[in-house]
Image (cartoon, rainbow, N blue to C red; front, side):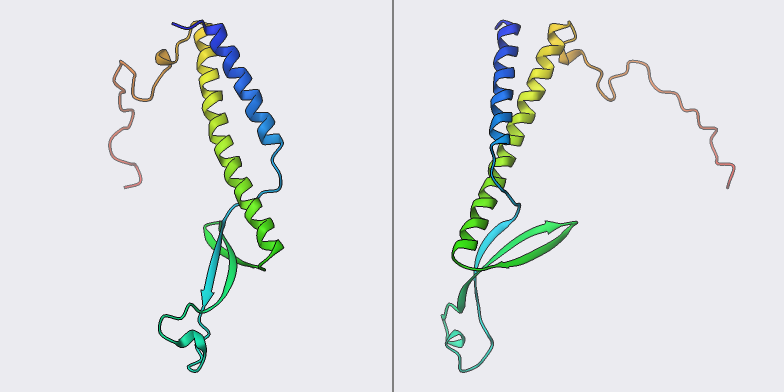
Length: 143
């Protein structure tokens, strides 16, 4: 079994590295940047021809806000490049966040083991030996 002190030291170093990576992140935003082509609906337009791609490309940023999908048009060119970098940076943040949570959980378990409380011995829901007894008196007094 590896030395607990060495394991904790390695996990602490990884945690510090991840925190440094997170603090160095640039501007970010959640969502998806999507290239879209639209048809205008005019019968004589080139976009109405069979197999035509449509007008565009137009770029839109889509994300959820309070359970609703919000779409925002993004101009092509430099603004589109900036938004793409921000979306990519957000994805990087989410990856680092998940890894940090895993490392912190492992570090917490290692610290518990060091004080003699192994994670396997922690109380688990439904692990009580004694069955619960009902305290309800049966029928409700309101009925």
